[in-house]
Image (tube, rainbow, N blue to C red; front, side, top):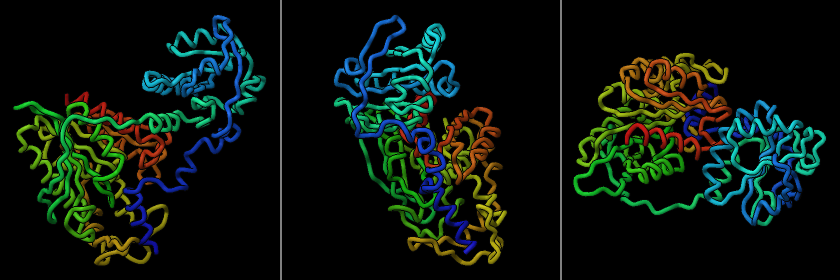
Length: 439
């Protein structure tokens, strides 16, 4: 029973976050309980601008989606979240979304100074009353700021939240119309450590003799090349003139090999085979490698083994370097392996879904030189990790930042292992970094 807990952890590295973790991280369950409910009509109101002009919400909306942002200049959390609200405004205002800020400042001078300081360009209104005395706060059930409410063109509430990432996720899903991207998609197989690896190459449209960068995308333990994370990244890169290849590691997805024979070292061999293949393509100029969870460990060690000259950039998403420490401890989540030592594991351990994890995986994880190998790469890198990751603590991502002087570290507040709070924004950061570094 204790042994199974360790391997339950490994599957969590691939599948993302438990329901318990999501509940723990969702601040709406604590701070948004009294906000107006989705499906109800948004209360109309009249408030004044900083210039003293009275405006009515229904007139501002003009039959469009409208984001109402409740804030105040004295609110530290509001100031911290301001860059996110600005980003939403820049991203969605051109798509027709109206933005309205409702301030709970009581002094007009402080309110106006904050608008100027933070460069707020969208409509601002206020009663110049405390939140506890505000009629609008009472109508909308605002007990905490920042709070946001999204209203549809008919005036119905779509979302009420205290989380700008949740708002961005909702807006992205509402306005994410998939565009036709010039280029091609090719399904192929590549020789791997345990047989043929199933892969997909997305390539931008190129003129004769033109070259482009290529990004290798590595999935996590038990995952596959398919799914929203790497599909949206591949689309974004293709639209910006960067090719990508995503593939199934041995024993995963559509690739050959048995799951029971999979180890981190032979996944590194798979990644090196993929690197060799794309490096020989005549249209490829430079190569980058991206990995999530165990795929992040594989990406970092592949970069270390092949050297700085091999990769123009490396991106790690919640890299699961904890897998070695857990094997060494013989425990996870405080449960010890009192029945079987990781030094002498069985031939395989039964996992749910009929999968079997092999002895060699455990033995190789126990002595895996993760950081010792990764440090041999000294080129540009981006590491993204969430403080809410209970599968792999974010300190494991920080350690990569310490051994890679040219790396950038992004710690996302409250984000879990699968970045479910806002996968769109996470992939946008990866895409922006690769575009900046490779183009």
